[in-house]
Length: 97
Ligand SMILES: [Zn+2]
Image 1 (cartoon, rainbow, N blue to C red):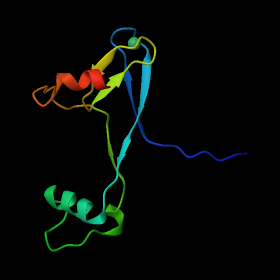
Image 2: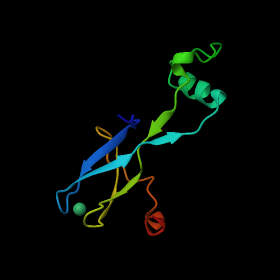
Image 3: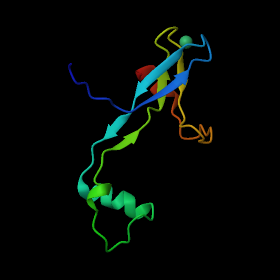
Image 4: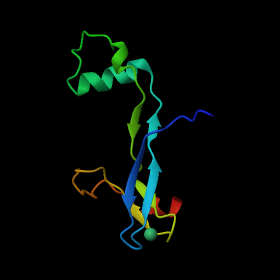
């Protein structure tokens, strides 16, 4: 039997056609220093602490926009439980999707 590697993904239900869609999680390419900085900012590491191996992981991000692969409707995407705050959203970016 062949082996396949599973990747993390997000799913969402289209409000226009009701179909279920999946989006790949975006792995953020970061150096150890950048990860160290982020964990320090989150308060997980003290400023004098080095990045432990268990934190040296690929951080994942959800897409900001999603497009239904069935009906083509584009939605602004927020992560589950996040506030729907569109102040940082740039409408012009929509046309470049
Ligand atoms: Zn749809």
